[in-house]
Image (cartoon, rainbow, N blue to C red; front, side, top):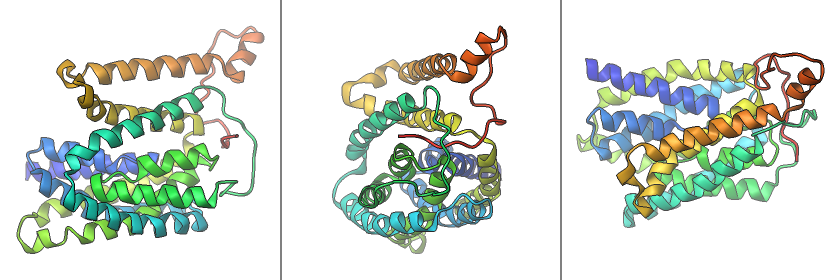
Length: 310
């Protein structure tokens, strides 16, 4: 019973992170499941199958709170499903453990770009077009690549969400659309894992526990997007990318011998860049020019909804 509660907690944590940041279900849930003693094969199957139901709940919640652009969902889901088939095919012939460090290097680069982009003031230009000026071809490519990595290592959001944010898509719409499109991609990826259920390699109780925790967290994370500023969300996305990928990427050059030191360094760097960016924001400078001694938090939940400028 206690083990199932841990699994449910993993589902809740993973779903909240994924729903609020548009990424992280796979890394978050896999870490907790493996730590609980579940085998890598069973963990992978559980995560991919849970993504389908949890993603559906998240998609409905994002739709309810107006965080979805239907055109964007289609542009991501169709190439994502094709990519998922390619990814699972590659995984059947190449060891995913050998691919993960190189994928982590790519995601680290994306994380650094995101950190630099959101370190300071974010343009407050408004637009009524949720899809903004995002390239159709670029979106399709991002969806296809996200499908491939999801099929291989369960990474969909970390590949797709940063691209959309970089293109200027409103963060809550980018995240909501990515979560919704993930349902189709996860369903395609999970199809190749259904044989595990028939062979008895997968504990249905574990899947149900993760689904229960994930479904409860889905509306909570979707609701929270309405009160989080784009800059704060952007910093969270970059921190998540850096923290979850510095370890796997570091194995290529032997950083694992330093234990948790790389992750600690990442935390220090993210904190330093965030504080430096906060001091440079117009809100801070305006208060300083008025003689105020109180720092205005530029990521306050009271700030107006803004968009990322080019």
